[in-house]
Image (cartoon, rainbow, N blue to C red; front, side, top):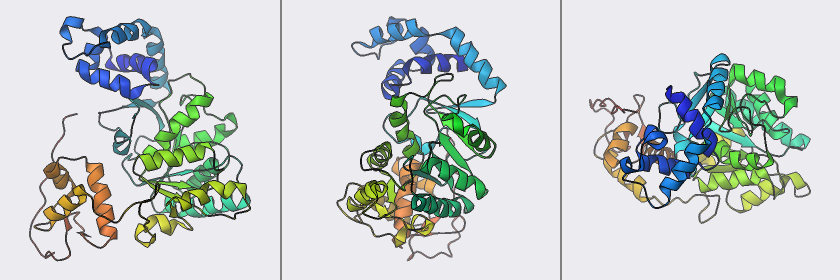
Length: 378
């Protein structure tokens, strides 16, 4: 049987509980074992696992999976699997990463490229639209991939601004990627397919449901190091996205607005809680210029954490690449890149043209050559 059919059938049953399903998959050792092995052949199961496996197997719909695969082949839809090549590295780091993502669009987009998530109200003011256009157009023109949710208002404005600037944008849907929602954005959705991509964990053929929107917001923030909140009420789905970003350890930027505007209540509150102020794209492009606030929910501290301290100690002896640091410290490359960005902004390290990192006190004339990054068998 085509292994893609196995993933499609498995995902359709468990996509709303991805971490629980992933943990069960790990205890089974492989998807094939989870789907077919006997209880005696699964020694790592804990109490209750076998009953869950039996229930899961009883719900598998192979005919549906076959139709899904045929549709994907005809419409050039890919699937990105957690733990496999091509899956967004940043998304691996969040709580409840999707087990499978459907991807419809440009397959040459680097999902580990510089991305910025931009979200906001469905009922923006002219000020909010103007700020979105100005900020996003610069970010997109400078090569940043813009991630948003294809909703009315700020989301659609962000997608349009990125496309108009000749940039790339990714829309995270609350429906299957075969159903462009809202339907009034059908034309915009196809423009995104040609110049970017539609992405969703929702199974094909499944329409958007109210509960899907808040659930998918963790993916919007999870795609990026930075999430920009333009306009929203203090209690809104946009604020849920901001909370996801903060919980994921990502930078939250907010556009300040007039106190008299209800649509600026959300961003103004975030700024009070330590979010970074964003008046132009430069505030995101040059984080060193942004004031870092300590002990705030949405802010960050200047104090060096243990990982950053160990990293700094390693490159104080000789220049190293990010891959070499990840291997030496035995931590994810995404965590290394976060520390490198912070240290570079603080002027504590220097990034050489060949990608090596060193302390400014270390001679940059060294003939040291980087080793090839370690190969990974996925």
